[in-house]
Image 1: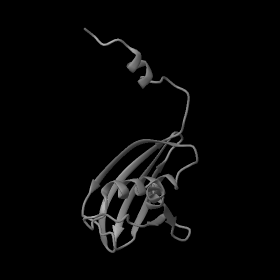
Image 2 (image 1 turned 30 degrees about the horizontal axis):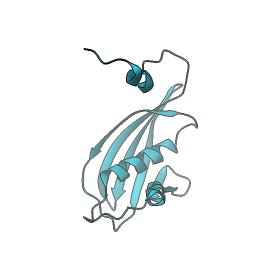
Image 3 (image 1 turned 60 degrees about the horizontal axis):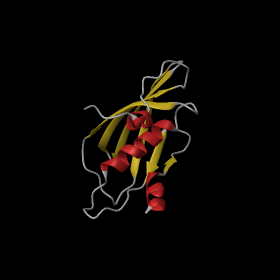
Image 4 (image 1 turned 90 degrees about the vertical axis):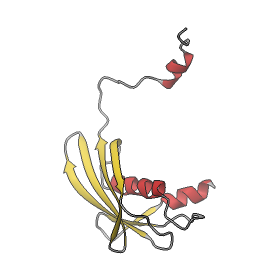
Length: 129
């Protein structure tokens, strides 16, 4: 249940570089679950950014299926470190095979106009007739 999920998302840094390893969660069909690979890719990218930065965007392409019998290597490239934004590229690999490519953008919290509407206010509003 929940402890299994938390353990499945755990990654370990390789030496002092921007690479991490993660373990695969067992699945009935024997293939690596893409959502887990993507979550671990995001965690690897986040560990190379400044503390407190929030995910701004994430895009990914799944290239090949992975195996639950092998660890996953996450190679993080620091594409850009700006004043407000940081961009990371992550390759998830098993052996010499790239399973997933992802690009993650992080944003430093700063004051500004909030464009997101509160879900609570939407739920409290009367339905149109």
